[in-house]
Image: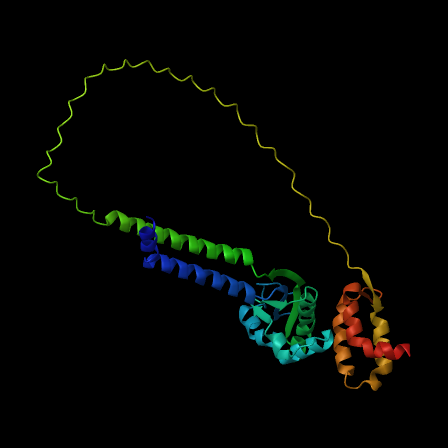
Length: 318
């Protein structure tokens, strides 16, 4: 009884297209989610320009063309080698450069983004680039100036989005099956009706039934009128809330290292490390603007001091 309708539905090409489209949609969703690598994104911003005063994006001396020309300098092998050596990264320079991107959203502003699987290492790489790039610019181009406008920080992460991708695949499957069922319904309505067999001449035609007796028409009852709805009460006036007051930014805590002590250790042991003496001088000049009035460095540079001056610090303890 039901074999013929089921066979007709399974033989329709619309159903097979819907099944194939559903399989393809879920396969694409699974491949897209499975091949996506979870990683963190960190960002720092640097302003470049010409001038002796402080630079800001869009001011005189900070141009978009100048920042665009320094794009390749950020992604140079020299900076990549210093970052890999300082942070002791277990990867090549080319692999690190593939995870670094640079954009110029405003005149004179370089926005550097780093992608890494480790949440702590991503901002460390961005901070190291923001520390080395201004020094490299000033040494190669004495007339230029580069300063960190926005310190390194986490801006987000990439996820596999299993729920979103599978939800999109389910929506595509639902649309395909709705279209397939609509085509089957239209086909059934437009199908020609089976011919009615002819009535035998020997059978007399059916006699018409006598008309029914007229019935008395019912008397319409009056419809009650609905009562008028009461007027809604007046809405209360909106309460204005006070604007939140911005909290003061905390002051950077002092670290464990003093700039004067580091300079003394470098002078005493520079002859023992001739290949690193020039690098230490560059780092000391860069740290001078972060030191306090007594030469004390902030705690945020403790890891950099130990990674950079570890050899001379170990020699001083002996």
